[in-house]
Structure formats: structure tokens, C-alpha cells
Image (tube, rainbow, N blue to C red):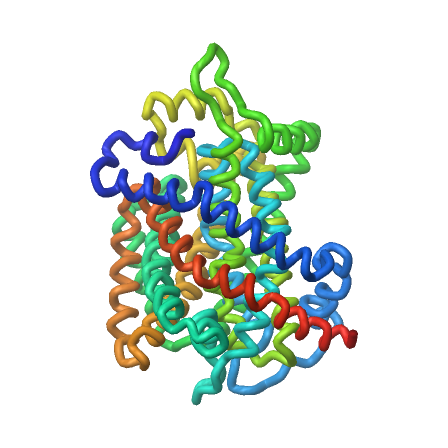
Length: 470
């Protein structure tokens, strides 16, 4: 199987070790654990996400469509909590992450991304429900997350510390480095702007928002997230419709490559099923965060009617982030013809991969087949909005992790400064090592959370029965 480290000849030493560690961590251990926990929760629920789709849609976004009044306590409104969570999930993973998964794992990676999302629906429900049930009242509203049900419900204080430690590191890698790297790559490709300057400006804009705390993050997110989603989905749909004749072949390619190795013409190594599984699940998890536990911290701050109702919002979050947004990105790339498996595999084998072949530039090339020069501009603007809102959400997650480790918020200002410096520095890094560090942090952060979800799933399902009136 090819990995990103094979694609960048200059990436050696410590960075290469990081990428190999990411592969060993995810394949097969974390891949199996995410799928097993998701399958276990889905089975215990009686396949609730599929058989009662109307129920959880009505309990989440349906309440907004019906004009249901939201509570006005000190916490975030439920829509602000969703927007903040989506701000961190619908980030570069939805554009650059999907493109990276296809390039390094083949079209079959998209299928496994879907599988991880379908199983992740119930995983997300359980962790959001538990986060609300075991959260704490504070002066500014509510605070909670996996560290609370790990320590308060299960008594796993060391596991809660482990989760919090990796939440801080995930905030700085997947939250700051990845998002900043993708913003600078997209804007540099679209406009030729200096990447370091882009990083500095991004850091300053991020700082202007996060200094206002979770309240300001929620207010900004609820305005930006709907706008960026409409822009991206509208433009992406136009690209797909313009190449409608290629949609069925693309879907067939996705399913076929998920179970059958793709060989290179003329012999040599090709895409493997294990590679598709590894990149599909890892990027799916990075996109929807189901089981990682990060977005549960945003939902814990919501002024929710009940724990289970917030769980419904968690399910919608996974559905929208992966099954809708990521699918649009994948189909744009596959139907437009900008992705050529033979060319990709040859570049991987010879170590001649360039940034234009993968990540955000690949998605930009797909949009350009319909919008011309404006295609890369649209992707750059969408990615800027996606990644910027992700920076906002992940800065809060890092703060929460650090607060649990230290027992208070005295180091909040120092962490915010470090986060902003990381944003600036990440704009000039190489994308391969950045993704590897993100995979390691997310994986180690998820370990105790997944075990807690497996043990406490029955408790969350009892909350579900209360909501349904069963």
C-alpha cells in the first residue's frame, strides 16, 4: 500500500516515522474499532438510524423547519451547537480530505467513507447524548464532553486525562495545522498569494473570534456554516449535473474498487482494498468526528431539551458532513475526469506527486471543468470558509482539553496564542506529514472514547426510549 510518505521524497526522518506510525495505528486496529463500535451501537439500537430516519430528522433539523422556538438560556442554542460542531467537521476534510483519500486510497476509499458514516450515525448519537447527560453547569452556560463521562460516570480519570491530552494535540494538528495548510494551498493555487502571509492573516482573523469564547464562536458559526454549505453544494451539484452521464460509472467504480484491487496498466503495484479501507475510514472519521469525541464538547454546551434530542443533532451532523458534503466532493472529482488512477499510481510509485495532483487543488481542477477559471476560485473561497470555521471549533476543543488537564482555565490565553502561532506556521508545511500527525492525534484521542461508548451505549439508548415515549 502506498502512503503519503512515499509521495514526498524530501519528507524523511521524523516525519516519515510519523506517517508510518499513523498507518500502524489505524490499520487494522483503529479501523476495526471504529467499525465495530459503530456496528455494535447500531445493532443495539435495532438499526434505529435506518428504520427511524424520520424520527431523528424530525427531532433535529425538522424542529427548525417547523419554526420550533429554541431555548434562550446561557448556553448555545441547539443550532449554534450544531453549527459549531459542523464548523469543525465540515472543514478541509470535506474538500482536501476527500481528494486526498481518493488519490492515496483510490475511488474505493469513498465507499468506506460512506460505511464509516452510516455506522457513525449511532456512535455520534451515543457520545452526544452522554456528553449532555454528564455535563456541568458553569457561569457561562454548560461545559462537558467525553472527559466528563469518562471520569464522572466510569471513574476512568487517567483515561479522561489521556483523552484531554490528545484533544489538545489534535487541536494543534488536525485543527490548526491541517486547516491552515489547506487554506494556504488553495489560495496560493487560485491567486498565487504568498502562503506565509495567508497564514498570518488567517491567524489574526481567527484570534479576533476566539477571544470572545464559545459564545462568539457559536454566533459566527451559525452565520457562516449555512452560507458556505449552500455555496459549495450548489456549485458542486452544477459540476455533477454537467457530467451526469459519468455519475453511474463513477458510483460503479467506487463500489468495485472498495472490494477489488485496482492494478496499474502494464503491471506493478496498484490500489489495494486495505488502502481504500484505511484512507476511507480515516478521512471519514476526520470529517464527521463520530467516535473521536471532539464535537461532543460543542454539543455539551447546547441549551438542549433532553440528552437524546442533542443526540439526534449529532446524527444529522454526521449525515450532512459526510453523506452529503463529502459525496458531492467525491463525485465532482470522479465525474469530471481530472482524476486518472493510472497517473496517480505512477506518481505515487515514482515519488513525483505534486500538490496540484491531490488535496484542494484536485477539487479545484474538478470545479474548473464547469466554471473555468472561477472553479478554483470557488473551491478556494469554500475551503477558506470551511477551514476557518474549523479553526474556530477546534480552538475551543483544545481549550476544553487543557482546562481538564490543569483543572482550570488559567492557561487559556497561553493556549490561544500557541494555537494562533500554529495556524501561521501550518500554512507553509507539507501536507503529507500534517495529515499524518492529525491521524495519530485523532486516533489516540478516540481510543478511550470508543471504549466508553461501547460500555455506555445501553444507557444512551434508554435516553432514546424516553424521548420516543417507549
